Image (cartoon, rainbow, N blue to C red; front, side, top):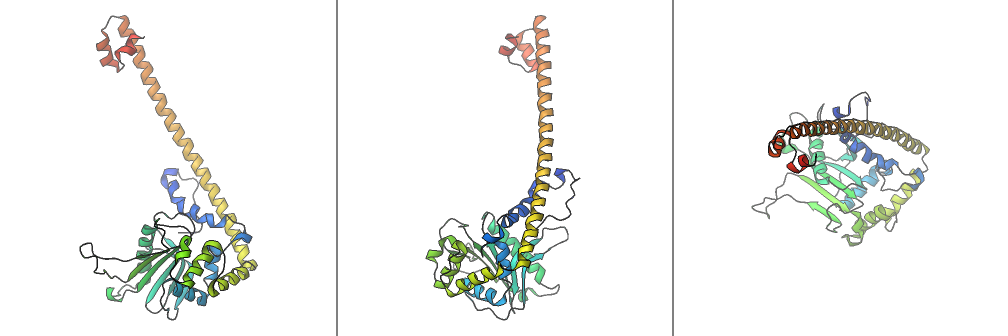
Length: 308
């Protein structure tokens, strides 16, 4: 997803693109609603900046999974992929590769709906973007999609939801396509399995550092918030997104006016048809036509015609 709406043509009619096209931008824009001084590690902007540090990124991954991460060959934050020219693009919070695996780490502080579908799309887009044209399927890299959430995405009060694919007819037989999806519910940090994971999730949820790694993150957050270049970048996006939101408000108002006019015209037509039916029924009644015949002709009930 893109940080801002690019090349918005305000002269387009609303039906050409639809308000729904801006859902992602407005949701993402929520991360820029806080004052700079109030940002925490859970806010996307600071999360991505701090995760640019390779050693922190490696340690966080090894706490989350836990697995050993080899040499990081590539690390990028706010990494954008375009699966096709006209298709939907994605922007991954933190994307990295080691020798034989790819990883996407997402921080999610609101809107926990549709996470399974997002994970599905991210996985496919990531595979397509990182696989060369003649690569054999057997050489596809093992991939991980990780969503770190400050709420419970599946409402089961578990700290970690690890997706395992099996066959419906044989649940104990693993369907291993070397893809992994894991969702973390930081709200349930108190019941996390190990101290490091518990400390990481607690820091994300409450901004309270209780372990060596979370204290390291705490220091990095303090240092990051003293970075005037990052502060200027954050304020720039805040201003740009506010402008984009105003464009959406203008479009929404135009849509509402257009729909209002359409409703008004339709209601006007209905009123005109009824008035014509009443006039016709009155004339027929004056000329002694039976009520049941008039009712069939004009669509009014006999009691309505009787009252004329």
